[in-house]
Length: 431
Image (cartoon, rainbow, N blue to C red):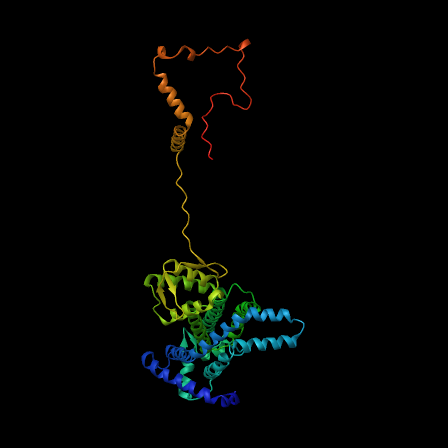
């Protein structure tokens, strides 16, 4: 352990110095030998390190997202050259070169921050084992070993025996209850962080081996934390729990404000952005402009959620510009599911349905109008007007003879090609 400490002294010494400085501040408020002073010193150190590593975290997100966008192309290459591993590797390297992506770029931030985490773990483990390290001298070491967090000493473990726990001034029940609760919280926070990434911030339209790996890690990491956690001192459990909670909150912020394209988080974000932009009729922040700019630059390669966002702006008379701004426009073109722009036409309104009485009255009026316009109607009117003359004025030759009654009481047969009963006047033929 001394060899390891000497090798990493360039990191452990600054880390131990930061812990001591935080302890001096919190010791004046809570007392130098209290668990609150040492516990908050550990929490503050973790937060300070994570703040310094935010740029690396952003690079890691960008690299991971770039690898996710290349997953479909990588899958095609694997299927095309599944029997030729050398050609498969060449095509993969060619794809990385053309897209400007390095597969190790997503791992470099983790490798860069691992020495700081190792140094912090080594300092806390030294306090737990009773060995001085860095700027922590014997007096500070004794103060740290007296500190209790909810009844459990900072140096106690879940696997410690009753004699060792009693030497630290605590009971075995308190130590195991506190450590068990912290291990469960540590594993649960790790599981929720990974599950949040899988369910909200993954492109659901593409099924790749990367998703299967992430799903497997979602269950493997919590189990690993639970197994190794029983051998960690309480101070180290405080460190891991703080790190997991910070990672969970940081990831929630990233998913909400910069989601992966095609994911459920992007659908929720674009829905909020649509309401905000249509209300103010402009993009108000740099982040909003960058999102709109990225969507406009995709053109026909937009996914379903991005097309819905563009169409929603079009319907209210807004047009997204290439620089990420939104202005009022006269365009009524909307995009279909395949990205083809179409012109939005108003819907054809269906006529109002009439009642039965209205339909009958309309039909009767139409019949009367057609009857008035026929020559037969004029003749009937003429005959009616002639019938008004006195019968004596009519010539005798115009008198009609009574029609003979059919013999045998039978009805007269209709002529060939005619219907029985009264005939409708024929309308004049159109030439």
